[in-house]
Image (cartoon, rainbow, N blue to C red; front, side):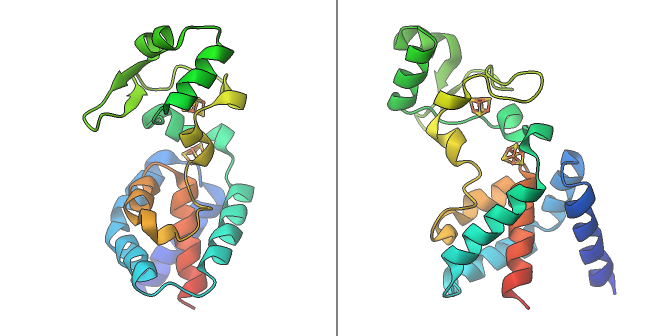
Length: 180
Ligand code: SF4
Ligand code: SF4
C-alpha cells in the first residue's frame, strides 16, 4: 500500500509538478537506492531493445519537461569546456581564447576546464542561453538520456536524477517499461 501511494505521488509530481526542483531533489534522494539498483540491473542484464527504449523515453520526457522553466543544469552544474568549445565560443564573442579562459574559466581538481561561477554567465533571465548556437558540446549532450548503452554512464544518471527532472522522469519511465 505504501508503495502504491508512493508511486502515485511520483506520477503526480512527474505529470504536474515536474519542474518543482526542490521536490525533485528530495524524491531523487529518497529513491536513490532503488534507482541505483535498477540502473545496476540495466548494466548486468540490459534489455535487448535498450537503445530503442532509451531514445523513446528521452523523446517522451522532453515532450513533457520544459527546460525553459527549469535551467537547473545551467544554474547548478555547468559544463566542461573542451579546447574546441573555447575556440568556437571565443570566436563568436570576438575574444581571444586566452582572454575568454581567464574571464570565465578555471581548472578544477580533475584538470578539466569549467566555469568560474554558477549560474552560468551565458544564462539569461528568461532561462535561454545567450550562446545557444555555439554552446559547449557538454551542454548540447546534457542530460545524456538519449545515449546508446546508457548503463555506461549509470553513475552520472544517478547524480543527475537530483539535478534534472527530465533524468528523474527518464529513470522512472524506464523502470515502468522494463519491470512490467
Ligand atoms: S536538461 Fe534537465 S536540468 Fe537542464 S533545464 Fe532541462 S530539465 Fe532542467
Ligand atoms: S552555455 Fe548555455 S546551455 Fe551551457 S550552461 Fe551556459 S546557459 Fe546553459
